[in-house]
Length: 333
Image (cartoon, rainbow, N blue to C red):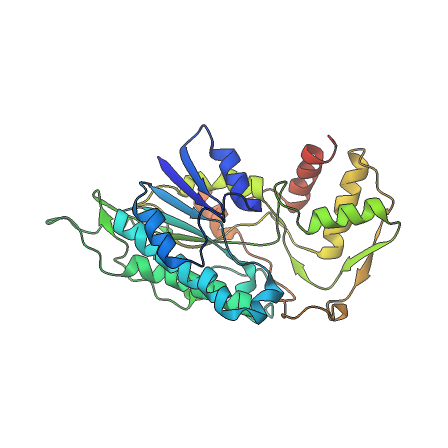
């Protein structure tokens, strides 16, 4: 199976490349090699490339900059994924596109399911939701197919569940028919992604704790950390082009505030022999973040019940994942 990873130098993309090297025929495009703001370059690059699955791990993720660079946000996060989906459809390939918990407004106060209606409160969230819609709409357009072929939809596939969270009704017949198969694009929503390849919140907090005796973090905003290693390990079961499609949530199990997240990281550092000056994490309020331009959802925990139902294996807890990360990448330093 030939895989193409877009955003291969990013936090998630690099983890995917590391996991799949030697297991699949995988090619990666980093930002200089494929800039998603250049739609013509996307068509040129991918038009001459052979692949079975494209994994789009690239995005314009600076939430505050999206507010002031709206056109770029929608170009990269919305228009480009639609182009990728159409190219994949024409080639009979599958697109796996990553989205975000920020498509929700945070008002629910209970884990968001794939069926919950999305209502973003930032340009970043709006652009990512538009990208989801474009991906799913592209796979539903009529596609050219060999004479005498027909479209087949396996019963019980993810593509048949209610994807109202994207405000898009997915028809029963969808995708492109090529090589005798229906290719079902998959949108995977993740939250608070962390991993060794690019610094994230957890790395910033550990660094501050190593340099200062007192640190603090927001205590009234809740979601769930998601380890790139766990994403990379779970994803191959969805590579089959005629298998699951639609929208799927994946995150490590449980929920926490940023304060709880940081405090657990310090506990893990202590357990793993990683020295820090700070031993506890003080509370901040979301309203204290006066420098932030964009609004953030107060509660954006993703339900992984659908994932557990499909695979028979629920994700491990975020505490287990964070402990594993610190043992692997900090205790060796």
